[in-house]
Image 1: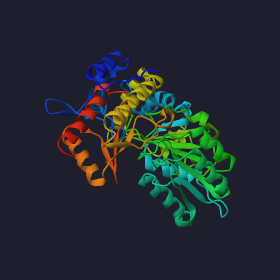
Image 2 (image 1 turned 90 degrees about the horizontal axis):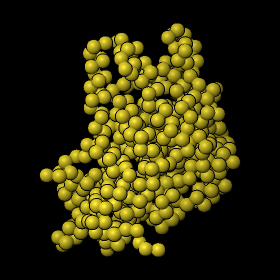
Image 3 (image 1 turned 135 degrees about the horizontal axis):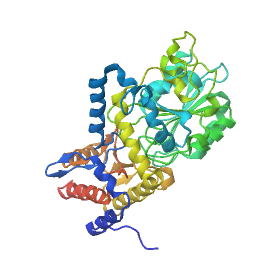
Image 4 (image 1 turned 45 degrees about the vertical axis):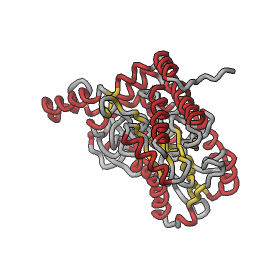
Length: 427
């Protein structure tokens, strides 16, 4: 079979012309650099601003100025129901029913709210399973929940070490730890995509194995939502949480998201309750008895931040129009192209740590620079100074993510040329 890629500018330009999603790049503001634009590979950390966001926010500011409190009930999109305006497209994106998802709070807040309900330790079963090297916020959260329930994280927190050469975790390792310790584990708290390596996991398989051992299952989808195809309902997971400021372009510090499987829609599990989680039909009776809205919305605490939901609403419209299936197909080709370029043009400089199989990764490639941390930092700083925006994760990883919504094949080739220029300067 002939190789599908080529390192020439002509090939990259033709690939961009043939891209059926090419028009979506124009829907985003790409930061400038010099007389041109940055090569922005950091959508895995902070997505770009959609062009429609400013006008949409200004519309809400106008409603506020013109209507005051009446904006909750009047205007094109009354604020009282504003979180519902993102619900349909969000449920479509994550593969869930509308009653199973809600945009609220932020990721770590939602993680704690979910663990209040789904981490119910007993003397016999009180451990939590996470991956070694989990994102610090997740580790802090699970360790603090363990302490809150009177247990010691040194004993109750199981951190599964990577068993594959590039720091990734096999399904066999997950299955083994659940076979060995499943009777002690109250909660499996696992990433959809591991933030440092870029490895994607089979959520349904993990859920199936964990449930067979009697464990509850939750997922942190911060690096998965808007990046890989998700079927949360069909996965059977008990809950999931995520942020919207990465691939979903919700803006810095954006409102987070949560999923609760419909079998828990009317759960009597303990929860931290708030007024906005009360059944919408009777909320304004101000009854002292909490009657939760069935489904994920019953975990809401406060009324939603309208201005913060606007960027998410605009971005979700674009995802709906493009279609996650088409975006994922482009992502596989685009990341595959960047991987091919690295391996064929930069093998003496960079090593790809992310799994090679497209089913085991999203858009992100995690790259280690040959020669150690100092050389890696030198390359990273060179790239940043020359308008190639990725991010650095200690101790030695440069993360780059060609996002299908607004990155192109020429961006990938530009990354290679920037690394070659650094090499050519004597590094």
